[in-house]
Length: 450
Image (cartoon, rainbow, N blue to C red; front, side, top):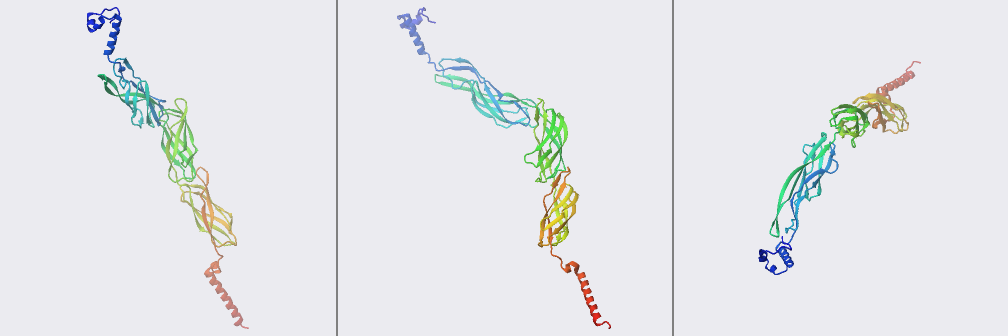
């Protein structure tokens, strides 16, 4: 080191001959200017021995239930550092930093977790140090997923600046390294009661009436339910609605099976086919909270509604007369009608004091005869009339129903002629009797002895 008190050596005098005749301070200033003139001008900074350090975690909750369908946000953190920094060294500053993860792509796998990842790898781009980026993945947890903690693999693909070599004073030669690494994020699948309905039986369940649905329900989940109640509920616009929709079963441990009977009603507009019904269990879970199990939808068969057909047997009357009209009623539906009664509605020109007839219990296909006493006004027009009738009946649960309206035809006819009244043989007898009487009178008058 050259100081103020250091004399110039012969070598120094040779390199800097002018210094020999200059004052010592001026010589030092001249030497410093010469050194800075020879060295390259400082052009930038260079970081040495740095690289990206990536980790991952889930934003928000990482606890899920079987059957969940969610978007899972995975956060990628870059905590990479540059360990050394060269300042004012006369080098060119590189465009990229060695601790930046460039062209980062994130892919989420299921590993051994009981779920499905429904998303392709996400392109995040460049992730600088001390920064984070989020990639979201659509996942569906299996319906009957076992409870537990699972590790999901997160695959990270990126490049980073491994080395930058300066060539001359104006060029840098970049060398990048590609990295494929896997980190893991934990998720928890919570225990819960899952039900499977293993048997569905419908008893006396037909359109327009009430009946019973018998269900066999099994706990196939991963939690032991306490104070459990099996419930049914209407599925969307299904015509099946609960009349008595809950059954208390108490403890419902894993693998338990319970048989439950529910009372339901079916809309009269229902057809003869199978309709959906929702089944679930309300229970106290492992944390002491009351929760509902996922809904299990089952199919319940519904039979044909109760229906009747009517056929006239004797249904003609004469103006001004009283008559008994008779019809046959048939059960054309799909279930038994109990304590059935037929009823007609008499309208002008008819009146009736006996408009109801008892039919009794009618199984599908059964036929019963019903008679009604009616009177007809004397001025009634001769033609066919239609009267309304209906059947009142009870179902197997003793609920009373009324059938759809039925039309019964009644014909008002002319008063019969003499021939129609007594018939041809009677008319012949009368004619013969008249002729005999006339002949006898003639005989008495002309041929009787005086």
